[in-house]
Length: 323
Image 1 (cartoon, one colour):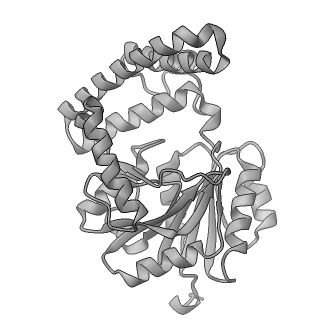
Image 2: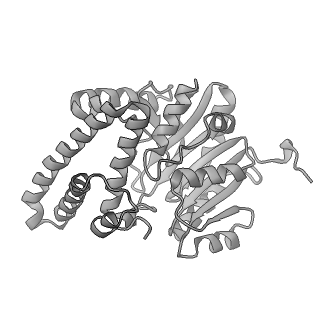
Image 3: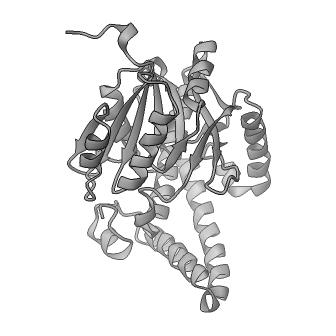
């Protein structure tokens, strides 16, 4: 028997998780506690966790739709799988290392309902210490990579718009830690581009929403606490490598080969400079030794010819992203 549209929850909250059981449970509890009954459909996509996340979510939250992947499908593909099972007219994409504050989901939904041109809206992000975090940033761009003054100027423009709840300028995107997307807009652009495995899926989603004519903005009155230290923490150097890989992929696919090449040059130069700086302090500081290892790992990845994450040399020298 089909369920009428009136009986469906207006929001489906999609949480992608991998080996973050306790964080995921706290996140879901905050979603349930901060919204009226029946308003949100929880959808949890488990990327082959080994810590019992999927089983515990199913036990503690029987109302949740739990999708169990047999492998780490990546962030974008996992969200697409969740969206395919979602019933809501709006999709609230939420990291597992977040806590939703009372009234947040209602305010985000109200923003989308009040503006038919709005494709996606993000809440204000704060850390566990109460300090504000970035809720929007500038899209990858080689000019901004090569010229710090340009990067600072563009970021100020994006951050000012975000803080004031105004539509983001063309160079801006909404972060994916907590993001509510109009389902019709999400489906219009085909959801996340699954070629992105980890990082910059949010930038690409915002870029394609804007290209399709949708506006993007932040709702400062809605708040989510971003604790940090979710699924990416265990990746170490591989996390930095995958962030750069996704950045170069975005530029290659959306801006062209020249843009990707220039950004790669800027990345190598920046890591060389930071590695040299970290090397000076590494003998006296564990933190700087770790930074030096990360910078050296990124430079090694470039020197090896940007190997794929499945390549044996990648797993041997940089770490296993599947761990």
